[in-house]
Amino acid sequence: MRSEKSKIQQREYQREHSRERYWTEPTYRERKKEQGKQWYKLHPTYHKDKYKNNIEVREQDKKRTKEYKQKYPNRRLANVLLCQAIKKGKIIKPTHCSKCGKAGKIEGHHEDYSKPLEVIWLCKACHNYTRKGIKHNAD
Image (cartoon, rainbow, N blue to C red; front, side):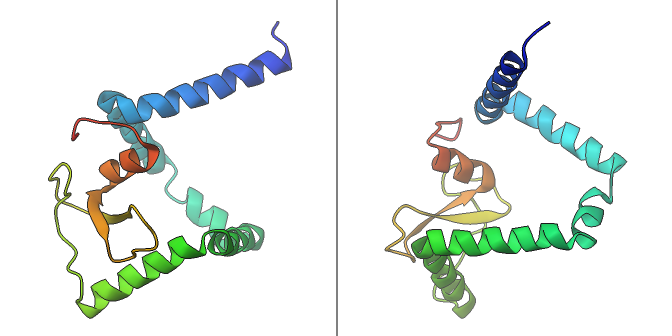
């Protein structure tokens, strides 16, 4: 029988290893996404029930958001200024990723938060790869 410490170490290894596989192996990522969709079909009200009736969880979320804003004021300001520029029409948000060309929901990636209007327009996958510093098929 394994000790509690070795079980924790194994869980940590598996968690880190699966995180790495998620970003480097497209088939693994697609399989995990499909498993998540199936789970949500079986449990459609899980998150609604969790947040709707739980004031404590909502308060924790508010606290976490407030801490993030205080910890990274330059990031928050850059995002706010970018959103305002898009709404005013000063910047036109493209419909395709500048890295892989995929259409869909496009996000702005700031290389430098002190230049809030200078962004690279990326899809969710490319944005996550860029933030994590992992090379992927679009590179």
